[in-house]
Length: 340
Image (tube, rainbow, N blue to C red; front, side, top):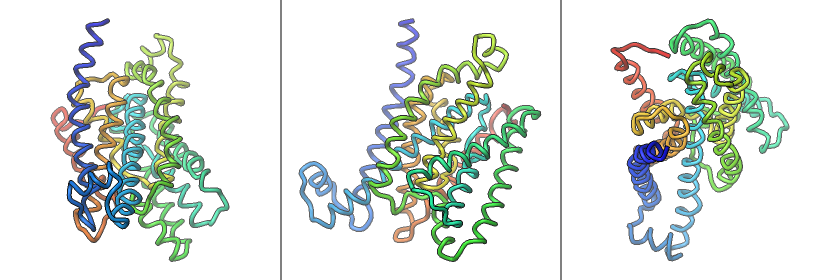
C-alpha cells in the first residue's frame, strides 16, 4: 500500500508543479497587462507593500484580480463536473455542453431575464440547476438504447440543439434591452464581474468541490461497468443519479454567474488523465480542477488582451480552441474511431 501511494504521489507532483507555474505566470501577466500596463516592480509594490496610485490600485485589486479569482473558481468547478460525468457515464465524450446540461441551465437563466420573473438573484443557481438537470435527464433517458460514446454524443447534440432553438425563440420574445443583456452572457464571459460574483460562487465552491471528491470512489467503481459495480455493492442507478445531480449543480452555479463556458469541462479531464497517466478519479479530479482553473484563466487573459481594446467573451475562445483540440483528439484516437 505504501509503495502504491508513493507511486501515485510521483504521478501528481510534476503535473501539479507545471500547472502551478503556468497559473502563476498567467495570473501575473493578467494583473500587469492592459490599460494601464504596470511594470513588475510597480505590481509587486502594489500587491505586497500597499503602494501604487489610487487608479492603478482600483484597476488591479477591484477589476483584474477578482476576474482572475473568478476564473479559477469557475474553471475548477467545470472541470470537476466533467470528470464526474465522464466517469459516472463511463463515456469520455460526456460533458455539460454535449449532454444538454449547459443548454438547459442557460435556457432557465434566460427565461428569468426575458420573462422578468421576480426571482431573487441568490436563487438563480437553483433554477439553473433545474434547467440543467432537465436537459441532462432528457439526454440520459433518450440515449439508453444507444451503444458507445457516439450514440450519446448524437443524442446530446440533438437535445442541445433543440434547447438552443427554444432559447432563440425565447430571446425573440424579449425586448432589445433583454437581447443586449443576454448576448454576452450566453457566449460565456468573465468580463464586468467583480468581488460580488466571487463571493456568490465561493460558498458553492467550498461545499461542492469536497462533495465531488467524496463521490470519487463511487465513480471509480462505475467506470468498471454497471455489472461489476453492482457486484461490488454499488447501487448503480442511485449512485449515477447522485453524481449527475452534483455535476449539474457544479455547472449550474457557473452558468448562473458567467453564462455557459464551453469545453473546459470536456477537455480538462482528458488533459489531466494524459498528464497523470491515471484513470483513478480520486487522483484525476483534484488535478483536473487545477487544470481547468489554469485553462480558463489563460483563455480569459487571451480574450481580454489579444484584440485589445476590443474584447471577445471567453466562451468564444474556449469553444474555438477547446473544440479544435477535442476534434483532433477524436480524429486521432484509435485511428479515428470514437468509443465509449
